[in-house]
View 1 (cartoon, rainbow, N blue to C red):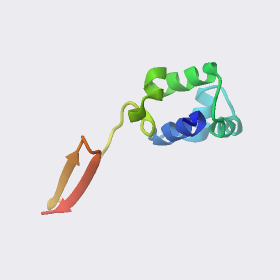
View 2: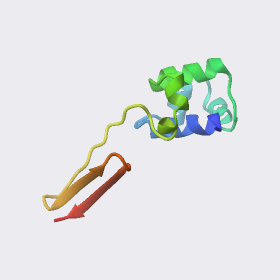
View 3: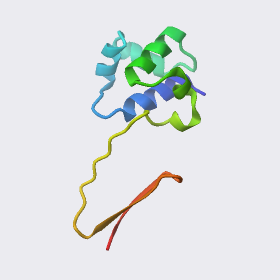
Length: 99
């Protein structure tokens, strides 16, 4: 697993968070954060801080299910009256169709 890439995916999946704002949260500059994204391995202290700010545990960070999404997500849909929303949680599929 490329730890830096996973950190980047998780940060980008956190709605309303910019790279600059997240860098400040973890006590780094934006340039330093982009350097972390490029590293295959990062220090334990950086990883612990990142997980704390993303509200996930180290175990959750390394779980396959959490490699591309944060622990919690809020999704808002604006549907027309003739739209049908189908959610297949097991297969991670979402579909909006017309009646």
